[in-house]
Length: 285
Image (cartoon, rainbow, N blue to C red; front, side, top):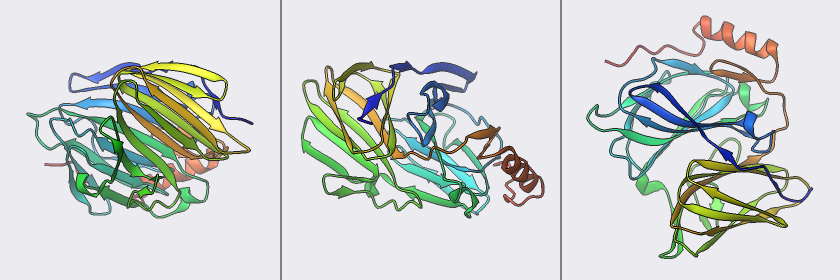
């Protein structure tokens, strides 16, 4: 199958509370074509929002925009207690389960960024959890001209490779591009992808398909029997992310913070959490 695109999807604006607002994109909107990505939430946080909570069966990725006024404190049941500042990345490969909490570093500064959930294969869902953190200085950039800068958060682009070594390879680019400049994104064989616009306007061309994206909109893409190339032309100064990974094509059964391949696995995850096997984490003080 050649590279194909979904219709343009506008993110759903949601207000969880006065201190937590976000734009949501779910895999359910894309008909499986952004597999393995499950969720993209573009959030603004001004106060502690969620108490310590479990993750299991996927990777939970937090990326703080470099323009964000503030950062977050990230704590987990493995004993990590880290500050994630603007421009930094926290990648939690939850595997069989982990407890986690995020709160703003300062309640005087709002935090803006992305929470991305990336599904794991059935095998990886059984692995011990791992936590990865990249500071802004550790994230390499590819900038062939002043009109195009790409932060390579994971994966590789034109010889520039992220130091992040994930158990299952995944591509995550943060792209800032000036009007009338182009960028080519490669989607490998048997992979899915999503392009989400934070601001600006671009035209996407995939073989004979053409779409146009504006702020808070996204398109999913997928290819099967060969690599595909997506041409992205900036119609205005724009900022977007590109995410891509190998299509898992496995059943997705979700229950709260757990994503597994069967109802039996969900039941096992719930029992493991109740027995304390995902660790313990007291609320931050």
